[in-house]
Image (tube, rainbow, N blue to C red):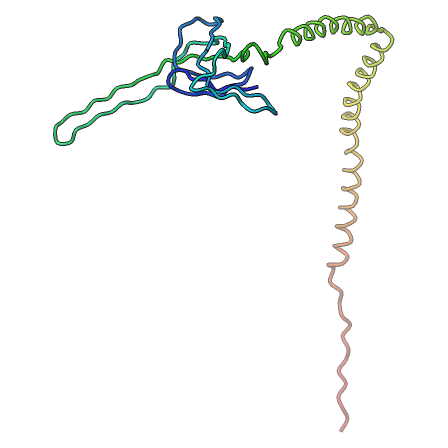
Length: 203
């Protein structure tokens, strides 16, 4: 269901549950307002009822959500060659409305949702309390502590073995160097070539 209303010199198409911003209307937040300037009332699948100019015995019930002001605008005036300049700011007053129903029809149901939420919130804490009783177990908690102690000791032992291992490697390296030097000396030692007597060719 929808309706076209007129307020503040403007026209708005509204349906139940809509939130609209209109020119300022009297009323505090939470107050109920009845807009009776209805131009068109229509329903889905039916021909709309058009007023001439207003629909008789039709009204839209609204609730005031907030009294606020619009964004600031700048008003600037100037006349050339006259040294005339004027600059002003302006914020228009406005009212935020929520449409409740049209001619008492199409009201949005909100109470049923609140009840379901309260029921869900009441059942959840009971489910959370059950697992807490089963949690404490001493046998299972001790096992991780022992594993942690062994894991903590293992790096120290590994480090000790890693530190001691380089000693034999150094000995092997020293021996290799010694053998290497001896072989180098043997290779570098010059070998005397046997002198071969020259033979003269007989003529």
